[in-house]
Amino acid sequence: MPRLEDVGLIGNGQFAAHVASDGDVVWCCLPRLDSDPVLASLLDETRGGCFQVGPAAGGVGRQHYLPNTNVLVTEFDDGQGAFRVIDFAPRFEQHQRAFHPTQLFRIIEPIWGTARVQVRCEPVLGWSGRQAERVSGSNHVRFEGYPAQLRLTTDVPLSYLGGQPFTLTGRRHLVLTWGSPIEEPLAPLADRFLSETVRYWQRWVKGCDIPAAYQEQVIRSALTLKMHCFEDTGAIVAATTTSLPEAPGSGRNWDYRYCWLRDAYYVLGALRRLGCFEEREKFTQWLLDVAGGSPDLDLAPLYRIDGRSDLAESQLEGWAGYEGNGPVRTGNGAASHRQNDVYGETALSLVPVFLDERFRDERSEAALDLVVRLARKAIFVAGSPDAGIWEYRSEWTPQTFSTLMSWAAVDRVAMVLEGRAPGAGAELAGEAALLRSEIVKNCWRPDLNSFAASYGTNDLDASLLQMVPLRFLPRDDPRLASTVDAIALALGRGDWLDRYRHDDGLGTPQVAFVLCTFWLVQALAGLGRHEEARRRLETSFEALSPLGLLSEDFDPATRRLWGNFPQAYSHVGLIHAAFDASPRWPDVL
View 1 (cartoon, one colour):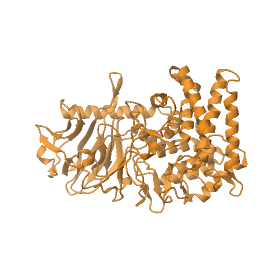
View 2: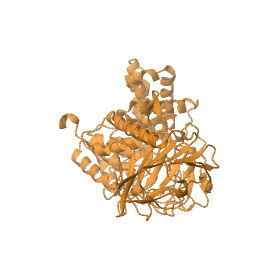
View 3: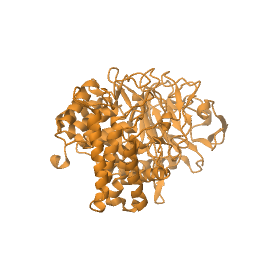
């Protein structure tokens, strides 16, 4: 089973696949990001099937992305010959719309010598773990038992697809398709789709804004975030995997193939900084659809990518889990939580509709009414017990971060109303002032010289680093700097940060939470401590995989990535931190 550091991601807005450095596709859900898996050896090498292209003698290769693309290359060299495997999911513009078929292309290309190659393709029938029945055609294998046709089309002899070694004498192609099969000549189709896909990604990157420093890391994070965008609805998943443990033996194995309302605020902010308007517009429309579909605004913390909230959590028997660390779960019980911060974050996500002139088409009285109602709901729930940002599975208490997000939403919505008519935002501005006073009264701890995680406790929480970029207090207010320093000291794990240190119902965290370190960078930069922010950021890059990818968690002691992978939240945090810590372009050019 590969380490996460040795796995790459490819995708096209319809589906995604994880390719390990040994040439195996270790995770792939079809036909969309939250479907059941057809390849799942990342969670069980025995039951998860395989789609491997590698040296006949075995071994791992070296991986890299083609520059500024999501096209992955794995190169193998056994001393007798060398070859590369080019993996990609086609994506490009066709007929003035995005073309993103459910097709996984694998091109095998000789480099030098006489390479001996083996290919095995054994998909499984979802969570049953049973291998699909194979039916051979003239140049393809059809796999039976799926709701749509799953077919492998290839110019590799079908007799070799069970792992029999063969000599690679020229370029060979394999395409795994869901639904409509490939009927065109394979080699020219693969060449055209590859060149068009490379061109698409490179053009997309050129359309992104990037900071003056940390460009390579931001570009890879942007490309990774794009692969988490579901083209059909505009939803953005937290991750494309399920059940990768936050730490070995922790039992903290969750299904992240869904869209969190909380994440929307941060993701949309990252897309704004990148200048990715199309993705912002689609995600904003998805938010309007979800929130507008709940007249009483009784919002769930997370939804499926089609907007449904039927996410009952279940544990699958018989699956070993990543590196033997079960359980394997589908669904997510957090969907039934009360997480009061989501009202603030959803309102904050929609506020740019009324402040950014490019969103004029999205503006309506109904949309404005929705944003105002979200702000009022945020006022109503502020200070009541909830599971909070970290989705505690212990007894709930009033969470400081939840009230902080209520304050921020009410403050910004008041700004929107005031911009439409002088005095129209006065009532909400007054409510925002009351919420700020409530946080100071209930959560400031002079003995800690910091704001606390929840009302009436002495616990610290890294989420309160967000007080700085949210402008909760003036930048020169000493309580901001002392809170940042207290959190960095108390929750530090080397140069990294934990979310918190108290028991959350499943014990205490054992590894650092990647996003929190990026929040610390943002806070330091916001306080004007730019050198310290840059040092922290540059140190954090040690956690990046060789391909520039990040998971949810990082263990500084073992230098291992843990948690669902790649994690959109982590890459969003990197984007924000890099923009805040980087020198401005006018100071560089």
